[in-house]
Image (tube, rainbow, N blue to C red; front, side):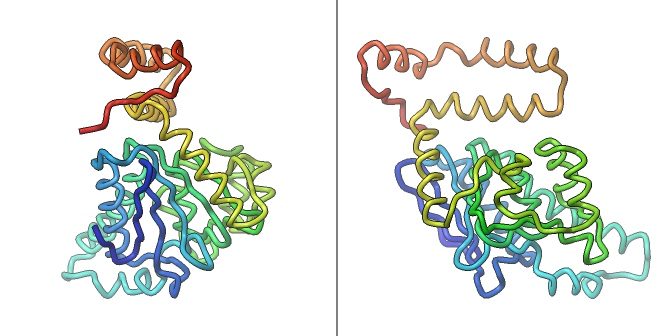
Length: 272
């Protein structure tokens, strides 16, 4: 499938998804957010895809929402009832939230490979990814505070689960840039690499490792991790017991054991 704002290439069970609006610093207007949701829904449903790498073409990773689209929102409000206009804004915010949540609800792990600017909505996006990596010159900024906005599409909800609350609050209140080495230090990314070439090489290697595992178990692991984030340990233990009571006795389990004893790589069933 061809997309307007994204490039998608699938090889060896790895989907490479790239923001492809370099003339706009990979910022997204309203149709682009809707398209992003479609991309990740398609990746979720595609049996060839086991893991996804999300990156940006050319200069920046992603500059978030297109400011022209944001500034034009008021002109799109219809009717003469203020309450109804406010509800239109609310529905618009939900639309952007749902686009980002499609990354989280995609059953395949999403690895963000970030270079240069990850700005505003870009931070919302990477907060919904499973794992983050960057270049040393990459920078992250919760830009909304500098524009007179409260970030509203995921950063303030997801980032506190990824980094220390004090660091999170400092970023949210100041909008300062956090560069690659600091991002690695505070746990915002797993690693910061010297340049984009090394970044992609390392991330592709990790994606290949994930793609070599049981796709059924990878999907299950993502589901369990997301459930655990929002529930108690007790609830989580009951959930995994119920999950494995249903899913444990798979052909993937048998193949993994046989491959181990035969000292070979497992060959899992192709997805349908």
